[in-house]
Image (cartoon, rainbow, N blue to C red):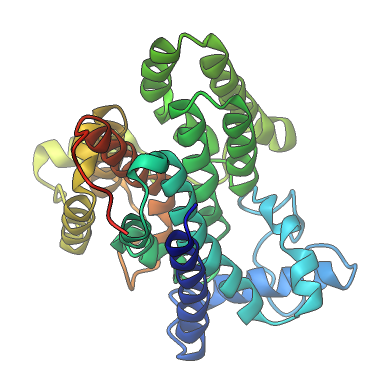
Length: 328
């Protein structure tokens, strides 16, 4: 990695942490109860009391008994113990989202297509910035590891697939859905490299991600974006429900898609991203998945597909254009 690229990554990491903390200090939390919950549970864990809540108690009050299975919360406790403040946690999320996403996206693009400009473009993508500054949400930590899986599949690096999948599984119980959406890309990559172990590694990760919450809880999830899919379909058919309840979601989706235009060269990832996003906008009964709304973090399961498609697409564009000069 060249000096300009290292500087770009350092700047993005710093910017992500600073922006997240600034948003917190400006009292612009999207969901103060959730922010307080994660902070209080982490504080108790750092004190050796486990992931319990005292003043704020709205779930089972343990790491495995919470509404969501976010084992990543264990990972950030040591850092929090050194600097016990909510700013520590939101700064970590901002740094990982902007710096980590740009770093792995650069890894996907490869040495020929990677440049400081490209890293900045992905690091400052509307989706990346939005997720980096959306309070403290364990689900957002699924983005960078999932991109690492894509990098492993593209460049035939099985360790990347395994390591990235493990990170995604730690983030939340939805990991199996996101990893399953990578199967078309995995099949294409496996055929290109003639290395079946890539597909085997991903399939094993999907099974593990699917089985883990069921082994712990006895079921796959505690909440659902839509508990009555048939009823929703009937309401749509009868005209009793708008197809797109929140126009703000459409506007943000269009902006993100345009900013990730190289993704058109990677339909294996772009199509699952578009289908998943469309399904979320039409069928979700949760709050809007868009900036300044409480459901923004739901897009974390789609971000790796869109950003990964853009990175792979840029890699293919540069690969197929030998005369294209790299920018600094």
